[in-house]
Image (cartoon, rainbow over all chains, first blue to last red; front, top):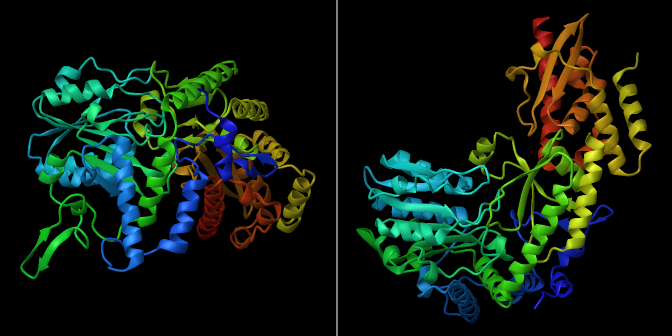
Length: 405
Length: 140
């Protein structure tokens, strides 16, 4: 069954706003997604009627807040098909989740151990590992990339070896749209005893991800990219592994007992959730995931594939265009450059015509280095986008090119 | 020869002809395309303005007690913006440049219509031009 786009779009107040005199065309979904009415209402309701700190008070509001926050955790657990709700850790976002693992799981690593990432990672899945490797004298290796923007597995047999303790890999490249074959990587990693972390920041808004089916050890994502609030995210980790790992930050909520002579730590998930969390962020994310769960993901994927093909076809007809990221298995993201123009100029003139795209290196400088370019223009679609919007985008792009050449 | 105030007024007039910001951008792009070429010797890393997202080269030298600016940029809108600043500030005495308020930027609405990164770039350009003027005054 096809998606009812009018009905979906009507749930997003921002999609009917204007930029100057032009209707907003929002193609920067890779950076953040817009929020449906249910999420906005949940945030308002919380602050108007439910605000209290959680896991602490005996009073009514604290109970309501705690119940809603823990309900959100269960919603997310069900959506990911995680075996236990205490395997769902609330974080500040993908970056925070990766840093937690680098810091805490990193403490279990010793001299000579290897960490494997890829050439197409976001800076947030590169820098925490570079910092860890420097601190602990470990080795960081990279799976290389081909000109199409796919991972090059020709040297995989040596890259994944008995010294590999962790493989951290993005599910979908934010700059190129490449969908990586993470199932294979997870199997190959497990075969040598390595743990595998999936950066799902770019995938959860497009597809259903089942952590038991994947058998990944860790999975991280950000709330704001899946129609939820900013400043909240999720780290899923296997129970046994999370229990073996030391706490990340110290403070309230993560302790069992504190005395002058020492502290005993709380159990999962609280062990990794020090301090008052982003309560409304967690509740809002739960509402967003519940809303998203109501859709048939096959319909979402069909529509997004249509958008990707439609936009790729239209863009390919533009003189002097070069698309970066031509993987066979690709998400609804198009990175491109127009010969003889600068991406910032194109982005500026698109913005003047109501089109929101991202320009720059997209926090993936190694990819830009690989292609020897300063950056790209990136259009990234969500399932609330339409072919009519792509028509407007192409028209605006043609106008921009004509002005710049 | 116009003074700074007259040059600013002339720019405000030129921009006021256009209602639509797309047309104003078209004008900025034309100004960028018309900017005289910088000498290749001056297109060196030392002359790149820090704080601009696109690469902008700026060179300054003293001619008969006045500062003369030349520039180039890899993005045409950035080049148009530096062309506007050169139009106003070039061939002025160092003190005049250092003290210039450049109210025309606000008047035209340039800053609000630039993205945050571009707006930072504009600020960086003005700072660098004033810095050059000050340095040239010291060594003059």
